[in-house]
Amino acid sequence: MNAEVSRPLVRHIYDLVDGAYAPTALATGPWDRRLQSGVVLNALIAHLIEQAPSPVPMVTSRLLLDMMKPTLMAPVETRVSVLREGKRLQLLDVELIQDGATTARASALRIRAGESPATDAPRHPLPPADLPSLNGGRSPLQHINETRLESGGLEVPGPGVVWARMTGEILPGVPISPFVQLAMAADFGSGTSSFVDWREWSFANVDISLHLTRMPQGEWVRIAAETGSAGNGIAIVHSTLADEQGELGHAHQTLFLDKRKSE
Picture (cartoon, rainbow, N blue to C red):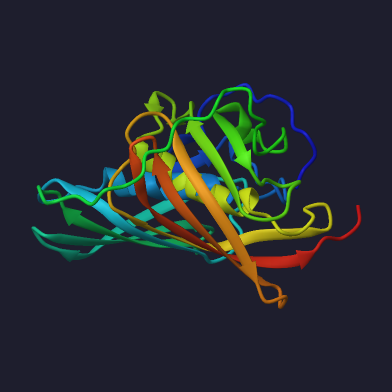
């Protein structure tokens, strides 16, 4: 990851320029400053999904996202296609494109919202404000999010729990919505449950999947994460997502582990 970063002058992640999404300094990735971070790509894709019309009110219950190739710190074109349209289900395909090539692709399943019985879920009290943050000043996104690390983190190997809230904007004047926040927070699982020294190893995720039962209520999202690996350069992160009212769903990340080159 990059060393501690200075404070950006903006509070939004993208500018919309001639129909393309131009990244601000907040989009800078933690492993390579020439690239956009996976967190902001999740945010952009979630935003595009929310902007797509649906025939009836629907909830996004599944999001599958693949990182096809690195996304540069340059404008991104987008394409949203409806693969299945119905009054019960809608399936969307979302692409992020640079120089004619797809850099990230996602599939989103939306289901008609309605009344049904609910299962019981344990509540989670918000931890005190004096807990340490997750990133420790190593990501520009620290300037538009607040994290409270209950356990784990980059310096403590093993499972971890972190709370996060987003305070910035996806575009100027467009606040980060609950769904966009959830898509961003789901990416925090790998850093929360790290099992390798980030100074020696990079562990960028090459995909992320979310299965959700509802959107978060309130400002905060809880991520309880655990990472497993067979020692073959691959790791899998499992995260349980919740808010103060109970469970929201689950997220998984596939990590590519690579020995870092000495600087």
